[in-house]
Every structure is written in structure tokens, then in C-alpha cells.
Image (cartoon, helix red, strand yellow):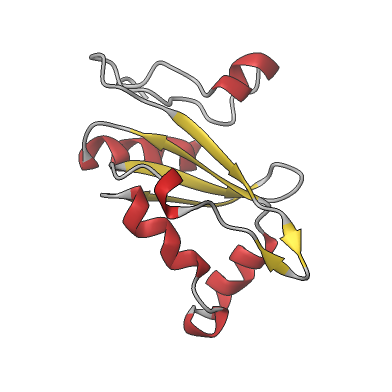
Length: 126
């Protein structure tokens, strides 16, 4: 995608192209953050809400092998991501299944919601 040039740190080290396009050009501050989920007694750990940036961005749920299960975007990652860790009976069955299979969630912060939408599209196409 023309507007994106950086890659996440993990992909840069491994040479992978899974997360092609992480940071928009023009110098906006982009941080790639990952939160690992530990499985304890069948319940997934979730990142603390305070650790999730209150900024627009795109996120990916990945399984233990690193396969992307879901790609989404949010106006505020801090407000969107905790919705996935509510009581599974309050989620759609396919969403509850995806959250149960997810090993971790990764997110990329961008400057605007439009950039988040463009990044989401690029990540889906990758």
C-alpha cells in the first residue's frame, strides 16, 4: 500500500512480510505493541486496559502458531479491544470462538481513523 513503509519489529527481525505496512509516512508516531495471553485454568489473560493505547489503530488476533485469526480497526484501541474479553456468553458465537483460539493480540497505532482503515485493509490483503 503506497502510504505505508515501516514494519513491526518482529517482522523486521525475521524477514516476514505478514504485517506489511505498519507506519504511515509523514512522521506520525507509531508503536507496535504486543500483548501475550497466558492461559490459566482455561481463561485467557488479557492486556490491562491501561496498557492499550487510547489512539486509533488496527489490531490482529493471532493463534499460537502466529496465524492471523482476525484483523480489525478502531477509533480508540483502548475502548475497542476490551469488548473482546467480556463474558463469552455476551459475544456472538464466532467471536467467542475466535477469542478462545487467540493466543495474543497485536496492534499498530496510527495518527487517524482513516489511516487505521487503510492499514486494516493492507493487513487483510497481506
